[in-house]
Image 1 (tube, rainbow, N blue to C red):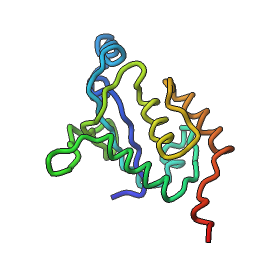
Image 2: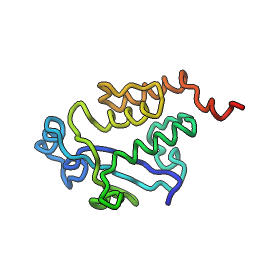
Image 3: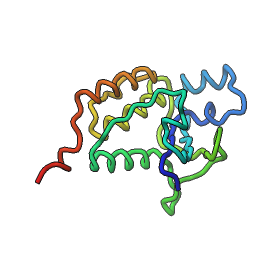
Length: 156
């Protein structure tokens, strides 16, 4: 159990590869392929843990947080007992890969997945053709300015 987690969704063959080849890259982009989630336990504030990365904090309501968590959970494949399916150790730190739901391809990337999670949580972000990290980050910055969360926390 950790206070923070980094979760990434992507192509199983590409994400879990020991070596990235042209063939693996083309398969990931042009053939709908199995997905995995890479989950890293982060023990300290992500702004310190990922100090060389741009991080945007978007305050969300309790209901949006519940939806966000459920949508992420729905991205994991589960076994007959409802348990997520671990596939192997992750890339770095205390991380693991888990079998994912959905297929990865050129118009359904990790960035599309991230935008879809935020969109389903009620943020003014569109997952349609959101193919780059820059697009997700740009929309997230705009969302901070137009999204007014937590109204239910202030009503009487």
